[in-house]
Length: 237
View 1 (spheres, rainbow, N blue to C red):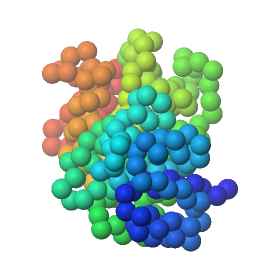
View 2 (view 1 turned 90 degrees about the vertical axis):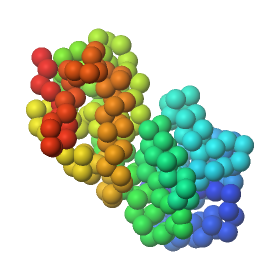
View 3 (view 1 turned 180 degrees about the vertical axis):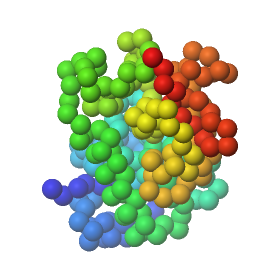
């Protein structure tokens, strides 16, 4: 089955280069030059992944990500492209639920590898598990008051849904599957990505997860800091 890709960038020449490269790599590509048009294209084409510039007219890349994730509950993988001075915005995009970013000038071979890897990770996380009718069934993970439903990409606390971004969910899910075991930031980063981002993003994700699930953030019940190592999911009953 041919995978589809939406490319969103103001630079027509760069779009043409990416169209050509990804077309030769087996993708069917669609493209547009602004964020509002991207929303329309996504609705019609339902791409397997999106490559979006951060600095877009009419609707920025960050706002595009925010609308997809939180308004439309659309978790299509997004890879941001940015200039070096937009790198902090790219990290903010990861917090909002983007999957990756690359700074320009783009290396198309690496970008294609990241797109394929991101699609594979999304399939592992959200497709390869059997659907369940209710989040209380046995293939969920139960830790204290937290219930994780990997088949539906959902987390509940005391039967109330907890809103997490895709990266936050992946991190919480991995720690929960390996509760009682400590992981370094580098190991956790590797679980989220097949290349090296800044390890500080793990602290950002952990802080956001704690804000959403911990009853007492100064003395966490679930996600513990392990001195000189990193983090682990506590074995809460």
